[in-house]
Amino acid sequence: MDTTDQNKVSAPDDAQRLIEQLDALQPGKQQQKTLQFQKLYPAIERALAREVPQKAIITELEKMGLHLSVGGFRSLLEVERKLRTESGDRVCCEHCGSNLTREGDDDNAS
Image (cartoon, rainbow, N blue to C red; front, side, top):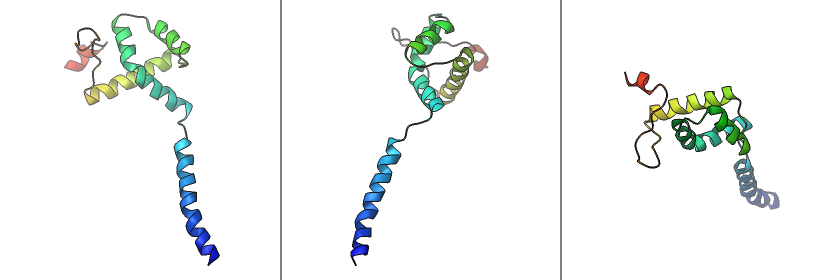
């Protein structure tokens, strides 16, 4: 009977420990980069709308700990733009609230 009582006590404890271990897991490095890029995306688009060179943006991202090659930056930008276009999410100007135009928007309008 002692063993049965111990199993009843340890099963919830084991489950709780497993839950805590799963909650402590972090995404892989690539997923972390993607998540960080997604958070920064509106600011990136605003900088691009002000005609800030991509290389300058990449340099600033590196200073913040987000290390991307030019190709990696462009790839993440393309994917994020596509996802946001499909969902109808647009980046707006901080000052006037109008939608920011992006390279290739005219092509997508047809």
